[in-house]
Length: 396
Figure 1: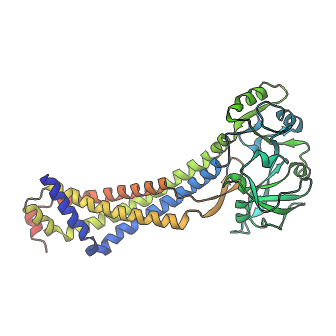
Figure 2 (figure 1 turned 90 degrees about the vertical axis):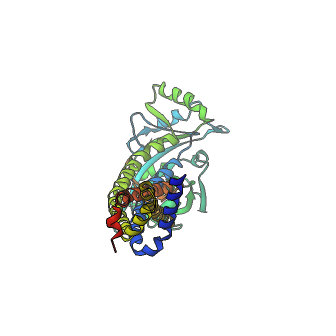
Figure 3 (figure 1 turned 45 degrees about the vertical axis):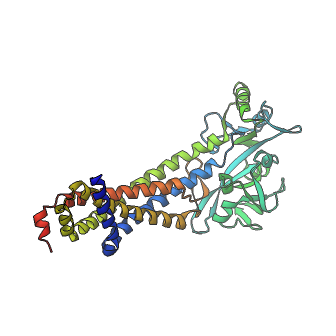
């Protein structure tokens, strides 16, 4: 109990004197806060991209592609195969109509609004009239639904924000093709909001694809219907396909880029953290040097070295906590919800998404700040605890 009382008394004294050393303490606080801002902002890119991909799929839907394909871009299905897929058991029906959409996926070049001279790969998806019933989360929020059989398109909200000429009423020019934007749609923040949708038959003619598609999206009777649906298709010699739950497909699409961003984020944070730790070390050495006589006096009065060690570490942790909280707050207000787009390396197309500064990221940033404070205060704390009392008492 005596040790605890001494430790608490010294720690309270250290914390009360931080404002007297504000200029030197600010060096450590600002350095740690800067690292936390960069750390959280970079990882919020991965969190936002991953969330956009995860929100895109539903376990109630199945995506059918050619066997061996790792994305829609590398898949290909003939019209007769699409017709056979529509006959499979386990598909939900609207009366006699199966809720299935055979779809074509192409890439067109459009400039970004932020950099008009840099064309971006924007996905254009040909859909069937049943597509809106298959994807129940999609709704047209501005304008109207496209008229099938025409060159009308509807555009995802994210695409309309990020890319040029995708506002309601504009005309998209791609090669010899012209498309009229008649509606803007939302899809609960999913990757579909990065796409342009048009009639699949019109898109086949525009790109000379004949009677072909790249995927078939089916709405299942229930999540348990996937096995019957898959077994029927994979055992049918007339088709050569693979079946995946839609949510699992998009989760897999996000892993490569998310992992890359996380590696980069942790690497940058580690390098910057070294600099912040040196700043904390210098700050705490300065604090120990300016209070050497005070520390020596307390030790001469009976305060043990353990109390001195813990109190200096406590001050360093407090500086780390302040820096972490400030950095986390700055990252949240500066980056959370910021709209951008990046390349999905699986399909070589742009995905629009928003940065997400999640509570988990904020906690991780603060923990990292505390680690920097702990490491930065360790050697100065050892120095304070081992100062020779006679020589320290003689210091001015």
